[in-house]
Structures are given as structure tokens and as C-alpha cells.
Length: 124
Image (cartoon, rainbow, N blue to C red; front, side, top):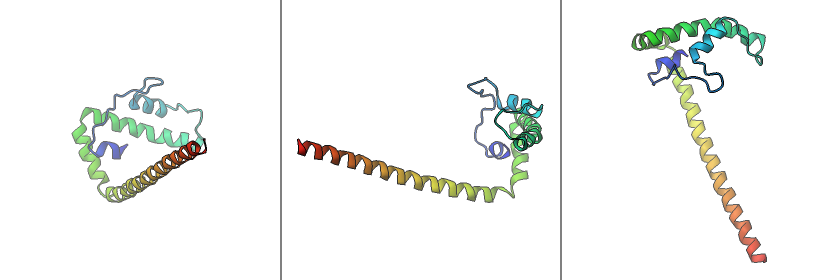
């Protein structure tokens, strides 16, 4: 959450979920109060219970004063960000490579499909 708020991109914290119409702040407040999801382990529940109050505080701070909160987060995260950016760069780079491979496979499948259709016409 800290990285999302610190990065400077526009974030709609008032956006509601499609299923229950709750915001990120609503969900974080519920989770910090001890609401356990049916599909989570006890370890995940305890982690959420510890982290959600921090998330609530962070979102409320960001809603009150986005620029000040963003500046504080950037100062806090300045030593962590370079490694994260390098990691994200590799993910993005790998994703582009995967997209190229998938595109080539699709083109190959289309080409093979046309060859099969051509053979059927020749047989008839």
C-alpha cells in the first residue's frame, strides 16, 4: 500500500467493490476489527489483523493530505525503492517477452489452421 500511494499515480480510494460496494478503507476497517475471510488460513488472518490498522491509518492520512503523506512515504521508502524498481523492471521485461512468444504462437496456430483448410479443399 505504501508503494502505491508513494508512486504518484492517481489512485481512487473511494472506488467500491462490485460485490458488496465497499471501499478499501471499509474493508481495512472490517479486517482490523477481526473479520476473518472464509478461505484464509489462521496465519493470513493474523497478518491481516496486524497490518489492516496500519492501512486504515495510511489511507485516512492520504485522504486528509495526499501530498504530505506521499512525501513522508517517499522519504521512508527511499532506500527500498531502487531494488523494487529493478525487480519490477525484470517482471515487465519478462512479461513483454512472454507476450511476444504468445503472439508468435497465435500466428503459427492461425497459419496451421489455414494450411489445414487448404488441404481439405484440395482433397475435395
